Image (tube, rainbow, N blue to C red; front, side, top):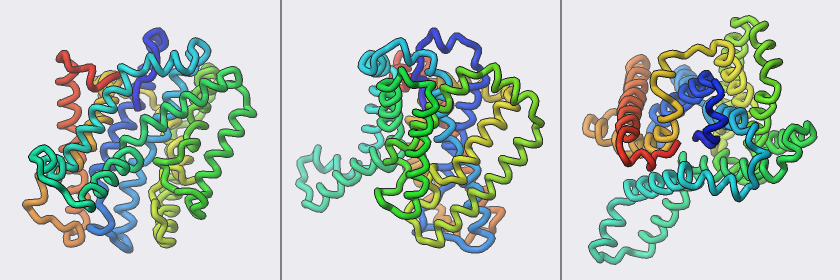
Length: 358
């Protein structure tokens, strides 16, 4: 979700890739804004179909970010050792992540931390709950991405001599397939946020697209737009169907990004956007400068701001007429996105812009 590339690489004209990155982040914000905890809203029938469809529409972002990252940094893999590369990323990536993840912990554990500052001793249960919340922050919220991402990058850097080797690609694909199957059998914890080997293949795939870009570009130009729209719509409903099936099995993570259907949907969306390519409105948001900041900050607003705005109205999604519910969900998304993009653009104009990285 970050611009983990060097300036010499970004000088190439990949504006359409930046635009795709901005779109992917927009839909990630949408996913987190429109989602309700099952205890609050667990619909059935047609209401469930609409709800799952809205979430599935927004589920392509994570995989696309890995593909984009591989596309943009593939040319630099031979320039640095893993240690050199990660050192270059420390200031622009890791420190902003540390700052905003800690802010999230403070916001979500405000009462406990305030009591500690006041010298009020907590119970063992309070301390245990705080430790659990910290663990949850780094394993199961959006802040899982950067450690996972940097691990994936490091793994590819270790095998940089074989970056364009299809045997390596096949091996990485097997890891991804394992995680996709594991969603159903839970041989290991099935959540995509802890699937540390599950996303490396998409980095490798992005690097291949960059290396063979002339051929890929020519191929995309020859394919009709309706084909990509058709594949995207078909895989969208395939994703809705698989999610519904996983929910019927009482799966712990029915929206897992590494579902087979979601992989197909994400790649279809990626090639659809490559085919479309011209996104002037998104480009005007300067996604290269704002995307990482939006990623770091938006979830804090989802958790704190939405409840502050809507809780006084005692809105129960179960009691809303379906069209009103959809409008309510989209309103939640628009509030978060408009505020976070404005805030990030404002920070970019100040000396504090380093805290949102690049």
